Length: 320
Ligand code: OGA
Ligand code: MN
Image (cartoon, rainbow, N blue to C red; front, side):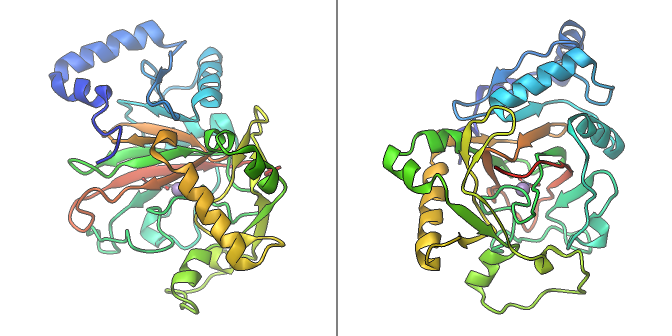
């Protein structure tokens, strides 16, 4: 069980009859439509934004509020949304160019605008992949193995397990700030080498690619390197940039770099830096890939319960 799993928000929501919740929702929708006020979800990061209907075009004032909240909280939760994939795509496009999905995801999961993240196999049955070294169940930041990794990701909850199936977010800017000055000096100019599947190679050297090979597969892209300590594109705040798919540190012996990366992930993912989100159907979350690690949590029956989310990814800038 996670720290935030029983947060007041979830207790409140489940204690109210559905029709009262709907009335509340309508009331807050009119009152706050142009100016949703963020409510902090944890000391680490995360804010709840109610009274905003993401299926509608975002008014300029609302967009400014969302951007300000995103800068301050890094993880925004918009509850009670009813979104088609196209609408999720259009909302995401407020914040930059939406990346096309593809890569190694199965054909069923691909979609031009918002793609499907699920625990279903090719036959549509739940399957447990939580032990895979390349799965979302490992702490990571999205597509760090790309030369220009994405700015933000959005997930929209379509089906969630009865209890659990959380997503956790660790604030790596706070984690950086909390490091001793000597460690900051040691790591400030280091660069991390990322390669898709670096983690898999460590646990299963020489493992063979599954299924057919296409040139766009992330498995086949060359390694890239990014600063271990990156400046946030909006604020300049320094944050650790690391996680799954990191291979080693440029210029350090591999084992030494690996040990440093492991220690920093362990530091950054202490509970005090983490917000754990317990999903409800209709939640849309957008998160900042520049200053967070995140992971799915296998705190549900992954081989029996369905968990389906729709996802968009918005392009970013070169990490500096
Ligand atoms: C992702 C991801 C985590 C989850 O979509 O990038 O890491 O909880 N998802 O599904
Ligand atoms: Mn991810």
